[in-house]
Length: 463
Image 1: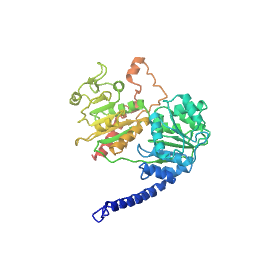
Image 2: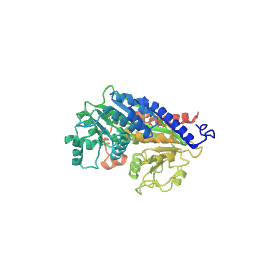
Image 3: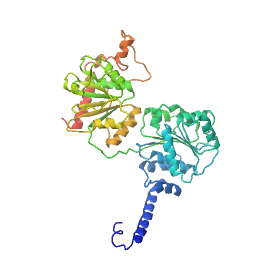
Image 4: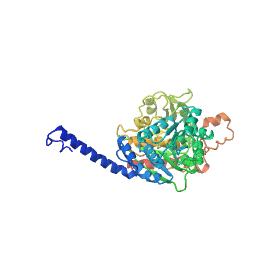
């Protein structure tokens, strides 16, 4: 192209002609690429005008299956093109508009996501062929009932409001052809599983499609009642470019908070290996809970950074913790926390994920040649945040096996009260406290520490 625009062309008009020819040929190249999606010409044109020049991997892998009528679970990170995928598929599948009842129902976690999906539809539904309605808690129920009965083809809604309209007989699900759940992991996080399942079962004739950033047990429990046995799961595991050098990352996936407490206790019992540790939690009350969960044989061994209560061992300056050889574990709350110099501490544990992923990332960026291990505890609900962190740093965390000695706590059962303990003593011990078995007295701590030590040494190439 640069050769054509060199001094060989005698006029500006000739250069403009060449530019137009190049632009036309480039559009053809784009169209050929988008043809992989088997879309109509108007949709290809709409995508091109909107700046979608090439199809995303998740679109290439899922579009033909969705258009073919299969139930699909599509797993992909933020920004992988999930929303555009089902917007295109919906516009393509419905083909014609203006039926009496809606034929596509799209459930999203909140009003912000409703607005985002409507924007995508407005971008690609250029001729306003379909009547698209957004439903969330910002509108009055009676007004929304009237809007639905006036007629619409596609509804984008939050689950609880959609269910309320269904129970009032305003939302007719008998004609639903395409039932889509987007950001399913956030819907589970918000506790909206019941309305999703009820609506999905009511639209029993429809095709079901689920989009999510992560798959886990709670999410699978929500969708299993309505997804067909022939459902196809497609996963796109994109990772961003590596942005910076970070410390060695280890990830422990646990079912709940109480199991986190048990895991932390188990690891910290290896005093030889975990000789200096900072443990991050989100609130000062959680810091208090974690602190009370330890058995304080040595009062100086465990401490809280700027503790809430005067009778808890604590430090107002992290340098005092670093310099005290008897203090081994410092629990730090992210709540109202200013910058904290944790250099020189060999173990960083994120017991909870901070609200802003940047907070965690700043702590794990390598500043020198110190050997540091960063360990993250994550429940199913937090896994989507883990994925965002991995995307941001351009590196996967190493998923660790849970120690054999770890007590997995069933969240549906209450901890048993020990003999001779009153209610106050039991609460101070923490919900996850449990007696050691006699057979574990000698190796209870050793097995967990040994596993962590061996993994750490293997990662660092130590003998």
